Image 1 (spheres, helix red, strand yellow):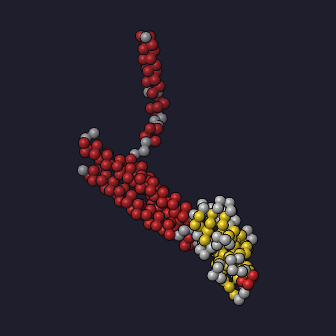
Image 2 (tube, rainbow over the protein chains, first blue to last red):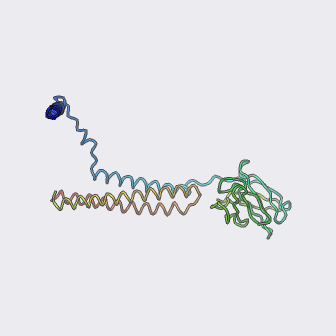
Image 3 (cartoon, rainbow over the protein chains, first blue to last red):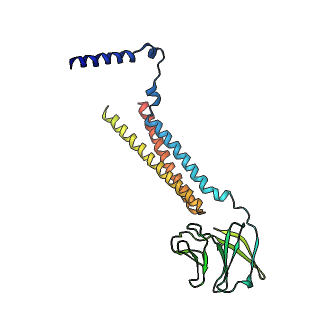
Length: 177
Length: 76
């Protein structure tokens, strides 16, 4: 036990020698003070972070107002006389990859929505019996009048297609999200 | 460390924590406004931006208080 203590002591002496090496005196490098972060520095960092986040929030809020939606094309989608009351017709708008559905309500008014369900993007169909737009994937239901979800998992309404009627022709003129 | 110094340290740490909480709240507001942006909602990001600006103002006032406090101590 006594020898071990001596060894340890000698080891400590060695450590001391290493710590007090000449090169440390010749080339002093204050690693600890270099990496030390004071509370004041942390406060400054947090304040700058706070300013940056506030700026980012302002940018996000202003983005929809600055970047205006590109002009939607005007596309002829159907003849009004070809859709009976309670009937529906599929079309694509604004591009060929955007399926939409046009429905004539019981009161005779025409409404059109994107056919892509706002839950998991399945195609919604018109359910005449329920007078609703129905998503068969997860049994989601949307009202025909407003496109609002009222049953099943969808939470957001369907994007509405703006329509314009000229004589017997129906045109799609924009998308209302 | 004197009692006065200890009080100062505690006060400073408390302010640091408060500002930290403010920054976390701002991050939450930013996440909510980005989420709303992707849902094409225009109202939520505006309210979130106003909230974020208010939190930043509070943080700024706290930081100013800290630096004024420092100045007074150094002058003494």
